[in-house]
Amino acid sequence: MPDTSIVNVKARRVWDSRGRPTIEAEVHTACGSVGRAIAPAGASRGSREAIDLRDGGVRLGGLDVSRAVAHVSGEIARRLCGMDVTRQLEIDQALCALDGSGNKARLGGNATVAVSMACAHAAAHAAGEPLWRHLAEGQPVRLPLPEIQIFGGGAHAGRRIDIQDLMVMPLSAGSFDEALSMTAEVYRAAGALMSEHGLLQGVADEGGFWPAFSSNEEALEMLVRAIERAGYRPGEQIGISLDIAASEFGRQGRYRLALEERELDSVEMAGMLVEWCRRFPVVSVEDPLAEDDTAGMGLFTAAVGDTVQIIGDDYLVTNAALVRAAAQEGACNAVLIKPNQVGTMTEALAALSAGKRAGFGTVVSARSGETEDVTIVHLAVGWDAGQLKVGSFARSERMAKWNEALRIEEALGSQARFAGRDALARNPARKPA
Ligand code: PGA
Ligand code: ZN
Image (tube, rainbow, N blue to C red; front, side, top):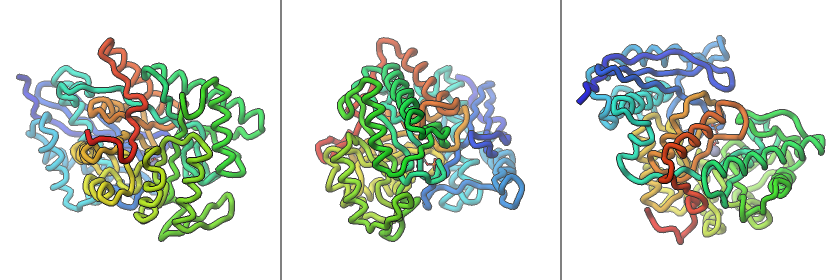
């Protein structure tokens, strides 16, 4: 047995896809294995997320991470050195206890998530396995159904439209490889349509086209046309998935649609979304109502949850207790898993497992601020989440993830199974896993 005790933990400042500082952690073991991981960063964050520790002040917009870096090289390194890197649970418990704040406010969720993921990589390295296989622990895995952004809006595109992500899900694909080539056709068709209509204005934070639409509905119509122009039947071969990110423009039961200069209450907001689900081939909706609007979430889920997947992102912040509560209340039927929302691998897995136990759909997700780090792809496969959300089909911080999934599919060879449309949650027919 190789000696997998941790001998060194260090961190460095690197830069993310928005040109902002972020933290990379590196973990070394006695047997010479090394693991490395980079913390991503969100722009439309839930208020209950783990705290992203930034320096503040004026330099680099206050976003520098020198305090988080110092925590890793200092007290985190001192605490973890000597521990067995293969004991992920004990490592993550030690990180939580050392932080002591309940939301990683002291050490920084960016520091803890980078270290936690780096430990997982080092453990896989020591075992001579790819991370996904190491995490699967011999259980069967599937390549996830991808959710891929075509148009970006909301906080990622100067709030040009209220909806944050308009995405496609290639339902009829037989493999991950086919799912990507279907998406590539839609992305190309969408770009051509936008340019023909004089609407092309570059790309948003996650690589989707930055739209100049005059209404949310126009964006939905254009997406349907792009799917058709690419030669696919909307709803049947390719479904539409929306991230409303409603906490960005709604609170205390009031929703302000900036583009249309309208204010809706919770019932009207849910009603508008129900109408969109009837008019357009929508298969999944994320954060339809705001993080403080459990009643609205429940109303929407009761109305369309038998045919539409309803994902909690800001609403659940990768928190197992919130997932269990949402299942009890019927507030949604799927959970987004973003490891940096909670700050450790173990807590992210707990949220995912709570979702599976409740019969929820589970979607591993990137953030809008990303890097070349591809850890989340290994989590999606190794934990058999069934779905993966990474942003659009452009820019290498996104493509690195899609391409990594292709490598995993190839490595699995004839054993590769693609989750496909079965991964989508439905109420109440879906049986708990
Ligand atoms: P983010 O949001 O900008 O916080 O990463 C992405 C999302 O809402 O899914
Ligand atoms: Zn979201």
